[in-house]
Length: 207
Ligand SMILES: Nc1ncnc2c1ncn2[C@@H]1O[C@H](COP(=O)(O)OP(=O)(O)OP(=O)(O)O)[C@@H](O)[C@H]1O
Image 1 (spheres, rainbow, N blue to C red):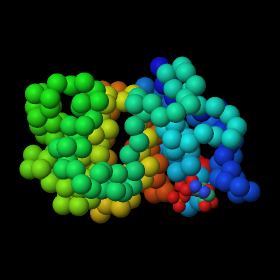
Image 2 (image 1 turned 135 degrees about the horizontal axis):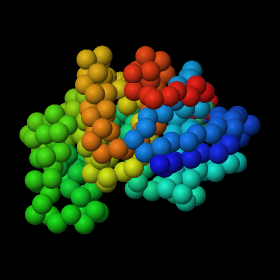
Image 3 (image 1 turned 30 degrees about the horizontal axis):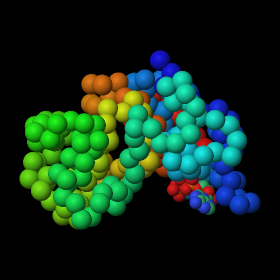
C-alpha cells in the first residue's frame, strides 16, 4: 500500500536551487534509499517529506492526504540524536512526555519503556540519565525508540549512523531492519555512503 508520495517537488533558497523536480512513491514496509553528494539536497528533501518544510512546487501526500504540516505518522531521525533531546530532561522524562501525548496512562509508562528498551538493546539505567550522559550509539537507539513510541507509518532517517563508529553503525542498521520486519514501518533512508544505502534499501534514488 502506497503510504508516502512526492510529486515533482522543488525547493530553492533565494537564488540557490536545493532540490529540483524530485518524485518518490513509498509503500508500507519498504525502504527507499536516498543518496548523493554533499549539497545535492538530501536533507532538504528529508525535511519536506517529513512536513517540516514546504516545497516551492509539487506536493507530498501521506496516507492519501496532502501533507501541509508535520504529522505524527511520519517521524524523523537525525544524524545528531543527542542534540534532538531536551538537555534538561532525563531520558525517562523525554520519553514519558511522548507517551503522555499518546494518552498512555502514567502508571503504564515504566512497563512500556522497559519493553521498548529491551527490544532496542538498551540498559534500563539509561532512563535516569541526561542526554549528555549517554554515548552517540545509545542516543541514536533512544531516538529510534522515541520515534517508534508514536507508532509511525513512515520514518525519515537522515544520515542516522554517519556520526557513529562502524560496529555501532551495524547494530543500529540491524535494529532498524528488525523493527521494520516486526511492524511494517516504511523508511526513507538517507546516507552519502553507498554501501550503507545498498544494505538498507529495497531501491535507491540518487540525487
Ligand atoms: N536553510 C537553508 N538556507 C539556505 N540554503 C540552504 C538551506 N538549507 C540548505 N541550503 C542549501 O541547499 C543545498 C542543499 O542542501 P542540503 O543540506 O539539502 O544537501 P545535502 O545533500 O543534505 O548535503 P550534506 O550531505 O552535506 O548534508 C545546499 O546548497 C545548501 O547550502
